[in-house]
Image 1 (cartoon, rainbow, N blue to C red):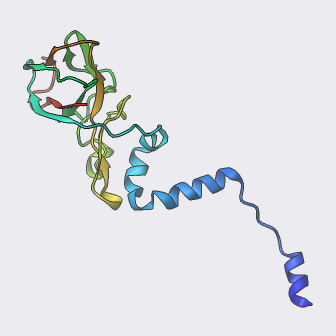
Image 2 (image 1 turned 60 degrees about the horizontal axis):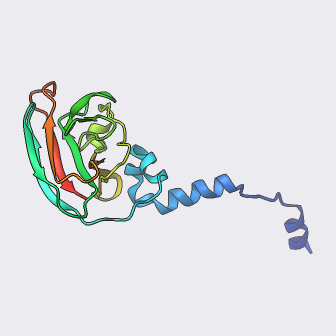
Image 3 (image 1 turned 60 degrees about the vertical axis):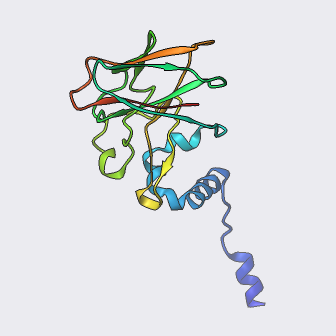
Length: 176
């Protein structure tokens, strides 16, 4: 009888839907808690299917350019910055043909690393193409972004901006 009375008189706790979602989110991403804290918008965007990448791996110094033949079936160029964590949104990094590539389209490659994050000014790229690297609290996402290719392009020119800092580069990573 005492047990029944105790159960009937105890306060009832109800988990509201937002609380349940928040707790589920933390539990699901606990292993990558460091990355979730530093790049939360990355996890709130709809997932894109993983497409095969054709590696280019070219780092362009200021004013340097490269002409690339566009393979069949690709739709975008994966690009990131190197040594540009202090550049603010909108700063010109280079061009794809005549289209500007800016901070915001891409970010510094290592901008979400724990040791660099609080000193960076880079935002998450608009169309983030970075991969999760590392594990646990040390995990991070590289700052690559997708730049759509001009429709029907057979050859493109990518040029790093002359205004890039001396030790910076525009990294042309892959076709996707």
